[in-house]
Length: 437
Image (cartoon, rainbow, N blue to C red; front, side, top):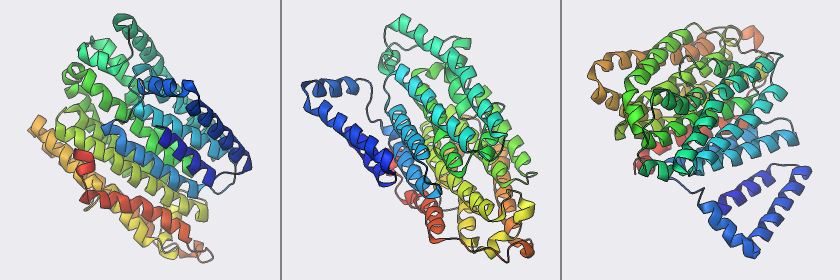
């Protein structure tokens, strides 16, 4: 844990200004005093009771580092506060992934909301950013307070917040208790009918805010379900039909909604909801195929969706519009055909992307769970291909050249960031052992 904390400091040091450098030196000095003092070893053993590396979260922690690294290149203004908020968010997400204690698990889950909330309302594009921030905060807190009460109640029953204690005691929750525990993570996923906050937050947030939301924040909800499914397996088994039906219905409805979108960011945001609901369906089958496929889909979606938002922002910086009507034909004049094709194809899980592997595993688990779902699943996957091709073909083949004759081509760093989203998304396909062990 100290190694990763030190790595965060060094990473942040490389991309910060003088004020943040001074803060890093202070943190390093305090760490040195803790380790060198007699209390240091006791302190480290104390932390090991509550935090540790977990095999399921290992690749999500790597994804956090990778997206944060690429996000630095998307920040045009040299503002200390932006780097500070991103650094705090990275630390909070890391502690969330390493939590062995339900209270700390909940604490860092909720703390992650604060930096992204201020990124949206401070650096958003319009006055509607305040409404987007309100939706983000309201939806999350509305389901978080009952969860906190439920965690305290479980402590009074078992005198511990430790996940292992709950697993050993084979806890069985009654209906409303199970929904209280699970819905806070379903909102952050987000589950269909609880997804209203996500498109608004994406549209109003700056590019680095969208990369955080798509690449990292949605994975907190998915990882929360992944941890709870082990402890409250009976509740998941009892309500799997309800959540799978709701998730697949949401995938179908939002896929149709994507076909009538003209805002690029809105379409990519809705496609994120589709991917995460499909991931949730695989998780709810409670088969190893589905759980492995869900973990792989979280990684694949984090890379592809973050890359798509970055590409949409590249067009926005040149045309000052997110509308497909304004941007039609634009990628021909900015020499962006290749990167758009690569990431759009990865978005609908073309070979050899991780998304293809994850969809095969999830579809297999859903077919085993209920074989009549196969026709429904094929329809959802088909619509996913349609809206991705619709987006790509609209901004490639239409002719609107009078708008773009005086615009410059993209820069090397923009090619680099785009390809650094795509390369690991496809290379990991040839080394699936890191996910399936």
